Image 1 (cartoon, helix red, strand yellow):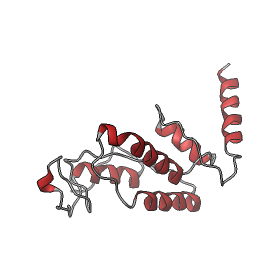
Image 2 (cartoon, helix red, strand yellow; image 1 turned 120 degrees about the horizontal axis):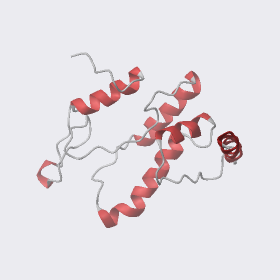
Image 3 (cartoon, rainbow, N blue to C red; image 1 turned 30 degrees about the vertical axis):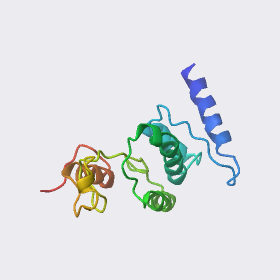
Image 4 (cartoon, rainbow, N blue to C red; image 1 turned 45 degrees about the vertical axis):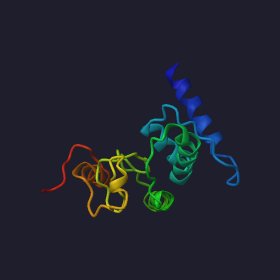
Length: 151
């Protein structure tokens, strides 16, 4: 039974990847897992750029009402394009490859303001990333979340 489900899922992925490049990609963001995202990249159902665009549209559609996102990295789509190109040339997906993240506004992020919701801090750009973000970047580069960067 499980074998049939896997086979049907594979057929679905292959059929879904046959859509025309001019058609917008419809990505259901509810409960989307890293594994499912990587499978979609692998079978060309959607790209990192498609995923980031979908998240940006979702943020745009709901954030005015809930006011949860204080800033969006203006280079988000550019970064997604670079990741797509990297995957196309290498064929390797690292564990966090092409996975968009949201960083709380009290965690320093290099090049972006860290305001903690305070208007007085809006003009301050940060020159370094918090250790938490450094560890995430290191996990991406090393292909494992269990190794820590050298001190």
